Amino acid sequence: MNSFTKLVWAAFITLLIISCEEKKPDLRLEQPEAFKKVLDAHGNWSKWVNSEAFSFTMFHETNLTQENYFINLDSREVRIDGQFFQIGYDGEKTWISPNRQAFGGPSVKFYQDFYFYFFAMPYILTDMKAEVVKVENQKLNGKDYEAFDATFESGYHSGPSNQYTLLVDPETRKLEWVLYKVTFFNNPNPPLQAMKYEDYRDAGGLIFPRVITGYSIAGDSTERFRSQVSFADVVLTEDIFDQDLFEMPEKLAVVAN
Image 1: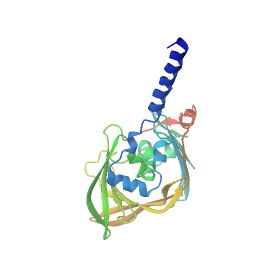
Image 2 (image 1 turned 90 degrees about the vertical axis):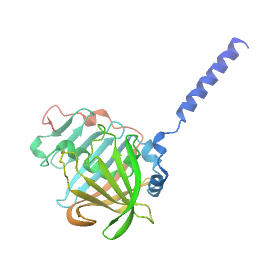
Image 3 (image 1 turned 135 degrees about the vertical axis):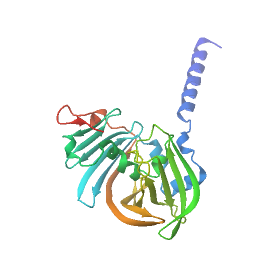
Image 4 (image 1 turned 180 degrees about the horizontal axis):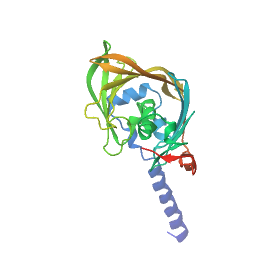
């Protein structure tokens, strides 16, 4: 074998190795069979796994305010543009502009992921740091649902709760309720709460709820209306948002917890 032939074969083998590495299956696509049926009922969920960034518009139906969300999915960098404030997470710190008083909630860091996590269900549970287990069926408001418990690896998850229970319609296999307890504030006995998912709409092959309504829970029934938000302009992209979008402004901004 002459030198030229050796070079050709070496190049071919190198390309073959690179090609095999590129085609290596994403482990996030290997979900438990029961949960995979739920994901399949929500569209081409591999699109979520293959996306790098996510954006949407949210409306608070109780006070008619609007917020625009921008998230880099791998790094979890977040930017929220509200009518009276901007919130950002640059991968290290959470900030708010123009000042802390612009946001009336108890924690800016808690809020930065709150609606993102709920709106991204069930897709966000394909994360390698999440575990989803099918449990016994559960009743809510007299209806019997398939139930799944979802937990995130300790120290990684920054959402409102350490554990979520997904209630899935047994016929359509679509997510209808998410039950949770807010553990972010280290309350030893937080009350059980629920989010109801309604009016699913297609967004490029995936479906998202147009409306999510929050309730308190008493026994196996919803008790009190807490909040309602609606969504529009959902976009998933294979390109990440520029880092500048998440950086804290030099003026009129403070680090916030």
